[in-house]
Length: 318
Image 1 (cartoon, rainbow, N blue to C red):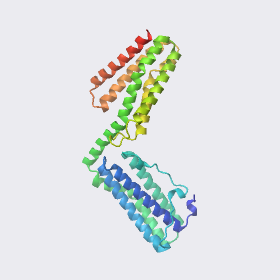
Image 2: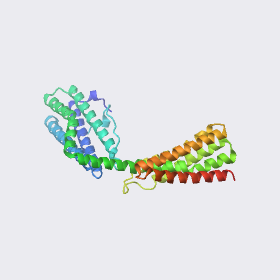
Image 3: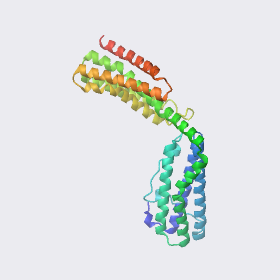
Image 4: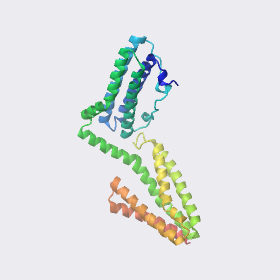
């Protein structure tokens, strides 16, 4: 890798051409990836991609005038100091906030590049173009705002906000809720069966921990392998798997931790209180995100939890 200070004027222009081409393709990929769920934002990125293409054409014209037809391939990874951006284009569907944040980082980095390149060149025509492009990158924020005013109307923003909420529920809330319910409910029976069978808090803690971690691993793999999200819109399977597995383990560990307390009755009383809090939280999430009436959600969740809890107590006292 070369240091930026070691680049010649010819290499700086070649690098600028490579950067503008890369950014144009990234923005075009964003536009394509957002088109289905966020069409208004997709139009903004499509026009920003065309703007980057225009920068590339101006740079190529100047390069030909100064150095001829051959343009050496110099990329960001060949020069020290550039940030490696996450390949968001590989993830479908694209997250709107992540895309906008990365686009802002790209524009800031490119503007800084042109400002530093100005310090490394003495040719008047090259300095003029680099200065113009630095100013263009500086004004890209206002360009995005102008394009947003054109495409992101009040109705379009409302539609995209609704879509973003639906995607959040589908990709995060649903798998997380499924894990929390499974972890909170399914571990009740083995935990309280071990508690009342042994009346040993440490042994009960070990059983609860094993049940929680085992359930988390099982649920995580089951969710990740259920589908790849391309047809259902449920997002990347690995993300869903991690969310489901983590929330399953958390749901079980919550009422297992009280058994670190040596006194059996105290630990059990606290564990029961934690179970009630967990069941209330599950009911609240269902009511908020799953369009279920709160009392109905409470009844369904608490009833299921009490049945499993009762089964554990009966088995433990058998």
